[in-house]
Structure formats: structure tokens, C-alpha cells
Amino acid sequence: MKNKIDMTEGAVFPKLVKFAVPLILSSILQLLFNAADIVVVGRYAGDNSLAAVGSTSSLVNLLVNFFIGLGVGCNVVAANFLGAGKKDELNKTVHTTIVLSLAGGVLLTFIGVLFSKQILILMGSPEEVLPLSTLYLKIFFGGITATVVYNFGAALLRSKGDTKRPLYILLAAGVINVVLNLIFVISFSMGVAGVAFATVLSQIFAAFCVILILMREEDEFRLVLKKLKIDRVIFFRILKIGLPAGFQGMLFSFSNMLIQSSVNSFGAVMVAGNSAAQSIEGFVYISMNSFAQGTLTFASQNMGAHKFDRIKKLILTAEFSVTGVGLILGNLALIFGRQLLGIYSDNDDVIEAGMLRLAVILSTYFTCGMMDCMASAIRGVGHSVMPMIVTLIGACGLRIVYLFTFFRIQRFHTFQSIFFSYPISWTVTFLFLTASFIWIMKNISAESKAA
Image (tube, rainbow, N blue to C red):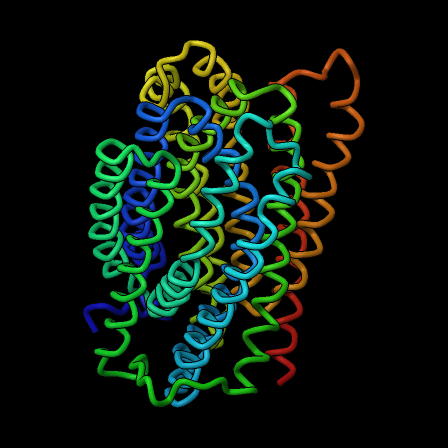
């Protein structure tokens, strides 16, 4: 019970914070260790290596986010069964989830290893960093199964409010990652290959830990290897939620790939500055996204318990919380932007390029958090197609239109103007999602009263 939060009873805000804070700390640790990758490779392997690692992020996200979306489906289904008190179905969900993670990881390895270079070429990756980017991706995707298994396992733990043990796992895995970085990159001069191998080995450790935790659970979350199989009913229920969430993640990543392609056209220095800025922004994003994850689990449990009024209270609490976090952290990071960018590179041109991006993103980042919380609430009540459609139109569609119209005008064809597509798409998408949530909750309440 100490690793479980009952979100169907009690005050909303304290439990949302209790859920979010360990998740924020976990994500910050993960980003710190990821930042250590970038700092080490930037300082000891040069700006081309820094650009090579950074330029792969949008492609990695495109392929990985689909399976992370399936993990969202596992989280929602498990939390629904937990809220409804259906223990047998919950245990079947645990085993189905792990099988899905293993299958998804193998598929990602196949796609990533075989097609990374071709996709990077299509994205217009600078020629001077293409060989390094390709090498990094092939090693990274060679061990991607461990990353998928960890994320799916952590999603199961989050479905019952357990965000502390994933924090401990990431702390240990991160220390391993940093130590291996120092050994591989500095001592053995392995460059981007060293960073990739360090990441893979640390993720294997994290996957092992989360599986071990599930095998030692004493309740319906207990994993028994002999029982590993897919339950067809639960599998399709997971797909109903997870597939649209996965496609939504892919759509976001696809639009980001187009933006990355536009960034690539300005050369390696701008790519390096953009990579460093993205790393800094990540600390703000994960702090906001932790409230979105809490919203997802909270809404799912209460949907299973048929406590619809608590869901409405939740979304108001979550939106106010995420707005405050986004405004405070975003503007603090912007104020100290040059000093933070200086950690990644001592090249003044790279730092200036990073500041051009930070000036646009960080001042408006809270709108991204508001959008994510609203989308999570909708998925938590069992409607995953709606956020996907709204995202397709409001976020991805607007970014693509922006890049192929406004950005093509010579006066606005600058490095910084690329990033104005983000706050525009976040704001419009949030408004559409809000209208969708109100409509869905009215229908749910009407159906409940009719029943």
C-alpha cells in the first residue's frame, strides 16, 4: 500500500502533487543524465559530435513515441481496472503489457538499424555529421528493447500511483550512464559511439530493475514469467487507447522532424545550438508533463470508479498547476539561458543560436503544458481518438502549413522564425481540446444518468 495512491478518494491537489513530484524528480534525473551525454560529447568530441547526437532526437522520438503511446494505453487500462476493483483483469493487463513491450522493442530495433541513415538523409542532415548520426542511431536502436520494456513497466507502476520506485531506478541507471560516458568518451575516445553504448547499457539495467519489481509484487500487479501471454480482450482494449495516443506522438514527432529539417538547412552551428536549447527546455517540459501524467492516471482511476465530478475538479487543478510551473520555470531558464547554454558549448555562435530558440519557446511553454493536461484527461476517460484528430489538425497541420507558407517568405525565412510555429500550434490545439473535453464529459454524465 505504501507504493499505491488511491486517487478516487480525498483532496485532489495533494494527491496530484504526491504523484507528480517523484515523477518530476525522475524526469529531471533522466534529463540531467541525458544532458551529461550532450555535455561530454560536446566538450570532448567537438561540435560536430554534439550536432550529430542532437540531430537524431526527432527521428528517435518519431519511432519511439508510437510505442510510448501504447504504454499510455496500458496505463489507462490498468488504472481503470484498479479503480473498478477488477483484480483478475488487472493481472492479465500486466502480462499483456510486458509481452507488447518485448514485441515492440524488437520491431523498433529492426526499423531503426536498417533505415536510420536513409531517414536522416531525407531529413537533410548536414553531410559533416551524417556518418556520426547514423552510427549513434544504429547502436541506440540496437538496444531499444530495454528502453521500451522500462517505459511500459513504469507505466504499469504509475497506474497505481507508484512514481517513487521508477525514481530510484532512474537514479541508479543515470549514475551508470554518466560513469560509462566518462569511461567510453574521455578515456577510450569513442565519441558518439561511447555515448550510445552508455545509454543502451544503462537502459538495460533500468529494464531489469522494473521487471524485478513487478515479479516481487504481492498483489494483482505481480508478474509471473510463466504467465506471459497476450489476453485478446485486454490487448484490443489497450490498442483502442494506445494506438491513437501512439499516432498522436508520431504526428507531433513528424512535424518536429520537418522543423528539424528546416533547422538543418542553417548549418552545423545552428543545429548544435538548437540541440543544446532543446536539452534545457526538456527540464521545463518534464516538470509540466508530470502533471499531465498525473492527470492521465487520476482520470483513469476515477473513470473506473465512475466518479465523474472528481475528474472535473482534477482538470481545473491540473491546468492551474501546470500553468504556474511552466511560467516560473520557463522564465527562470530564459533568464539564465546563456549561462546554461555555456555548459554545453563554449562556442559563442552556438550559444547565440540556442538563445534564439529559447527566447521563443520558454516564454510560451506553459501553453504546451496546458495542452498536454487536457489531452491526458480526455485519454484518461477512454477517448483517445479525439486528441489524435485535434492534434493532427491543431498542432501538426498548423506547423506544416506555417513552414510551407509563412516561413517561405524571404523576410521571415530566419532561424528564429522557425520556432514561432510551436506556441501557435500549442494554443490552438489547447482550445480545441478544451471544447472536446467539455463535450465528452457532458455525454458521459448524460449516459450515466440514463443508466
